[in-house]
Structure formats: C-alpha cells, structure tokens
Image 1 (cartoon, helix red, strand yellow):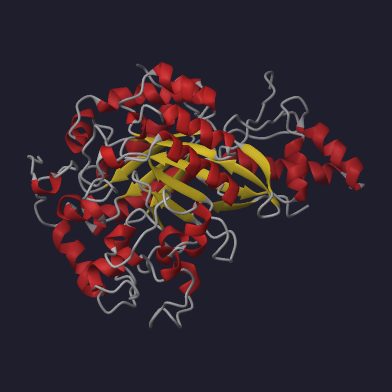
Image 2: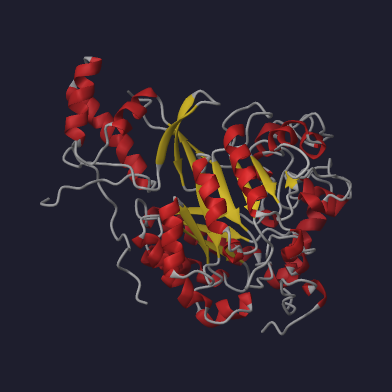
Length: 108
Length: 386
C-alpha cells in the first residue's frame, strides 16, 4: 500500500474566512464530577474556559471565524476586531495541536 | 479575552491537586497475548495466562464503573488487545460509559473490516506501534515477519475512518539513528501525533538493558533532532518525547504521581497504580472481581501506600521538587535500592545516582548481547540478536 494520501504537508493558518469544526475524534463535554468543561483528545485533556467553550460550541463547520467573532462582540459588547484576533489566536493554537478542523476557504 | 487559550495538560500531568479525585486515565491490559515479542515490552516478565483473563462481562463492568468514577480516557492495551475476540463488546461498553477510547495496538492482527467496525462502535484514537522504519530491523526487533507493511495499511484505514492516529515509536540503541525517519514516516501515514518513546528500563527492558541502552551521545543527538523537528513540523505533527531517565538530572514524575492520575487493570483484573507496580513485591493488589473499582482507587492499600508526599524520606521530604516529580519512580527505587520509599536513583540527589548512571555508560559502550525475546517463559530463552 502506498502512503502519503493523508499526509499533512503544511501548517494550516487560521483566518477570518475559515469555517472551523471539531474533528470526529475530539469531544467537548461537561465533566460533572469536576464541575468544568473538558475537551478530550488523543492523550490530552484540555480545560477550556467559559469563553473558549462558547467559541467552540459555535464551531460547526458552517459559521466562519468572522461570524463567530461577530456573535461574541454582540454578546460581550466588545470591539469585533479585538475579539476576532483573540479567537484566531486560540483556534490557531488548537489547530497546531491537531485538535481542530480549520475549514479553510477553498478559493484562497 | 487573553485567557481564552485552553490550559493544556497531558493526560498524565496534574490537573487537580487533590489525590483522591478520580484518575484521568485507565490503562486496561485486556490480555498479555501478543504475536510480537519485542524485548522492551512493558508487560511483566511473568506474563498472565489466557485462562486467568477477565470475561467479557467483567471487562464491561470495569468500563461502566470507570465512567461512574469520573475516569475520562480508557487505553485498551495488552499484549495485543485485538487478539480478544470480544474487543468490540468491551469497546461498546466503554463508549456507552462516556469514556474517550484509545486502542494501543501493534496492528498486525487487524483487517480493514474489523477496524471499520471498531470505528463504527465509537473508537476515537488508534495508537499504532512501530519497531523501526527499516522493515528488516523491525522484523528482527519484534521477531515477527512483515509487520511494517501491515502497520502502514492499518494507518491508512484509521485515517479513512476519521479516527485520530498516533504512531508510537519505542527508541533504543538498535533504532535510535532512525528517529528523524520515524517522524517523517508518521507524517506520511497521516498521524497527528508521534511518541518518540525512549525505552524505560523495567520488566523486559530491564532484562534486555544491555541490548537497548543508547549512549549519552546518541541520546543527545536524537533529542536535538526531535527539537528541530518540532520547529520544522509545527502545525503538522505533535511530537511527544519520553526521556530515558538514566540520562536525566531529575527523575520523571512517574505516572504523574503514585495513585494520582492513572490506574492500570491487568488481564486477570488486578488494579495497579502503574503497570510495573507488581515488581514491588510487598504490595498486595485488589481485584475488580472482589471489590468495586472506586473503592480500590480511594481506599486500596497499594494506592494509599505512596499516595501524596507523607511517605517520603529525605532527601525527598524537604525537597522543593517533591510536588513536581514525587521522588520519581517507586518501582525503580525498590528495584535498585530495595526500599520503595527511597529517592529514585534517577535523581541526582540519590546517593546511588553516580553508580547508576555509570551502568548506562558502560553498557551502552559494550557490544550488545542477543535479545531475550518477550514470550511466556522467554526470559530463559535467547535468540540470535544481530
């Protein structure tokens, strides 16, 4: 069997136009015993804070990063560009750790 | 909004300071049977026989109890877990209990249909071992022919099914020069993660230490290669490295602290604070057939024996690192000093450290003896190693 068809060859860069989602193998759920949200991934447990949870719940592969920033800007009455930058940083970190599908725009 | 980045913690790193909380992970050795005979196997040299293995229903009960206890991740391991014909039924119970499921496999016994079935049931992650990237050397190390080609197939099926893929590469003096190629191999397979797992010298690996211990120079070279690859492949593959503690200044925080993060269930149902704990010969271990898992975790003698820091002697007791590395590994302390409450000789503060580090230096510069392969009764049988 030849290999290479699933090889990732370049780092994904998260932009406002990406439509991110969690891969099948990453699971976010509430951990009742410890009273917090957790993100379960291979050999890792992430502890997302309240805002990270809010963002990740909106990562459905349909909304763009800009859409999500817009929703949070309304909810938190904060500047959209500042929020957008923060969200991109957070999603870039998760993407680099292999626990996010970036949903890159196809025509970029 | 500066705090949106999730705090990342390895499954074996401290999340909660309280000892008696639920463990994060549970390692289940479903069987000690395995078609491979790797001379560094982490199973005990006294392998458990098939007749003593837990039944399907007993393993399913363990999964349900683990979910109720608050365990987050289960590692279905062995031996080779896929030799259990009821793996599907055990996995199903784990998935229904809400556990994140990881299959630790050599891959050689899997076919596409079975792996797809496991994915359908809900398997999240496949951790696939390789013995080397040179097929002939891989065959020699595992005493199994044609393994690498089969592993490549398994890697591609895993990706096809949308599961996470980790390549686990145990590293030692007989494959350490190939570390950069192992990382490239994992990328080509589509793995999101690779473990460069320097062999830890317990059980079979301790028996074979002279055949496996790399020189300090080759370890340093490999460590530098890993650092470079982490930079080069950032965002492409996550590279985790387990360091050989013979070359460390401070001991590893073994298991993230005794009875703190992890528990291990043996094929026959004994519950251990770590997979090597039975080497501490004066400890007694409870069995899931006799006692609920939560009760064993919270109140079992073996778990409470070295939980926390109260059991420590000097130099650990007043050491500022005592909550960082917990005095290292209890099994190594017992094996090398005869007292499990002593500082692990991996620590530079141990009176035995210099003598112990010299062993690695001498053995790694000597001609490696033939492997003593991992098999039932195998510690007495030698097979040509080179």
